[in-house]
Length: 419
Ligand code: ADP
Ligand code: MG
Image 1 (tube, rainbow, N blue to C red):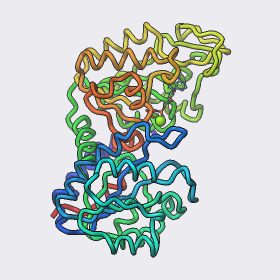
Image 2: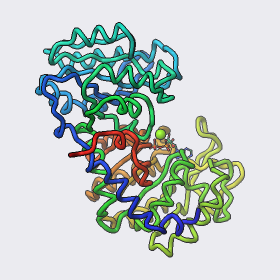
Image 3: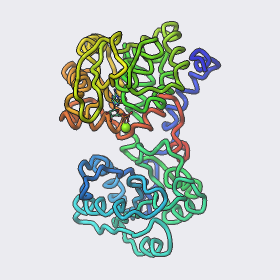
Image 4: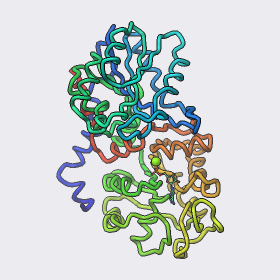
C-alpha cells in the first residue's frame, strides 16, 4: 500500500483513537479490589543464565507497585506469566521456580506459593486455601498449547480462579493468548496495573503530541516487522534514521550493492515507496553514508569502514561508520524527542558496538527525551551501563511497535470500559 493511502480516509484519526484506547479502560485504581481474588497477568519472561539464574529482574521489580497495592487492598493474588518458548509442552528448564524464589525475596513477610500447573483441580484447591495477602504463582501457561491458541476452555479455567483480572504484561500485550486476552471473556472486572499504565502513557505522550522535531531511530534485524511501522510514521515523525540491519534493504532499494548484509527482498518495492513519498509528507529518511563491514559476524578476519558506494560482495555490514555517526548526531542534536527501536549494529560484539554506543551516549549527554523499545535495544543500554540515564526504557519491543503502528493492543482492548 502506498503511504498516501494509509494516511487517507480519516485513518489518522483512527490511529490516535487506537493509541489512546487505554484511557477509556479501567485502571487498577478504578477497580473495587478489597478482599478479592485477583488474577494478575505479568510478564516475568526474564533472561536466565545457563544455570537458570535470573540475570536481570527488572520485569519483576517493575510490577512491585501493583503487587503492593493489591496487598494493601487485602487481596489474594494469583500471578500468571509465561517464560520462554516451551511450544505447548512441559520443559523443566522453563518452570517458574527461579521467579518464585525471587518473589520470596521481595515479599519475605507474605506467604508465597507456587503451583505445579497453570490450571486444574490442584490449582483450584490451592486457590481455595489462599488467605488474604497470599501470593500464588501459577506454572508457565505456555506448557499448554491452548495458551497460544487462545483456547476458550483454557481461558475459562484460568478465569474461574479469580474475581478480578489485572494486566501488567505490556511486553506480551500484542498477543491474543488465553492468559492475555481470552481470559477476559470470562471475568467481569478487569483493568491495567501501574507498569502497564506507565508504558502506555510514555508511548502515547510521544505519539499524540510529539515535541518537534520528532526523530525515530530504527535498527536491529527484525527488518520486516519494523518496515511495517515506517508507513505509519511517515507524516508523523519529522526524521526517521535507519541503521542496523534495517539499513541494507534501503541501500539496496537505492541501487547500492550490499554484499552479504541482511535484507528483506520482499519489501523492496515498499521501501522504494517510502523513499519516494516521504518528502511529500515532510518526513526525512536518513540512511548511513558509511558502514563497518567484515567477512563474517563471529570470527571476522577483517573489519573495516567503507562508504556505502564501496560495499563489496564479500562484505557483511555490521555497524554504522564514523561519518554516519556524526551525521546522525547532528539530526538528533536538533530533535526534541526520540523513539529508538533496534540497535544500530551487532553491538553484542565489542568491535561492532560503536554506532549504538556513541548514539546512546550522545542522547544521554544532550539530555534529549528518548524512549527505548525492543528487548535487544534495552540489552544494549544495559551492556553500556546507560540503563538508568536514558528517559525511559520500555519493557516491550513488539508491543511498542504495535502501538507505533496504531494497532490496538489486544490485552488492552479486552479490559473493562470505564463507567
Ligand atoms: P530489538 O530487540 O531492539 O527490537 P531486533 O530484535 O530487531 O531489535 O534486532 C536486534 C539484533 O539486531 C541485535 O542482536 C543485533 O546484533 C542485530 N543487528 C544490528 N545490526 C545488524 C546488522 N547490521 N546485521 C545483522 N544484525 C544486526
Ligand atoms: Mg529483539
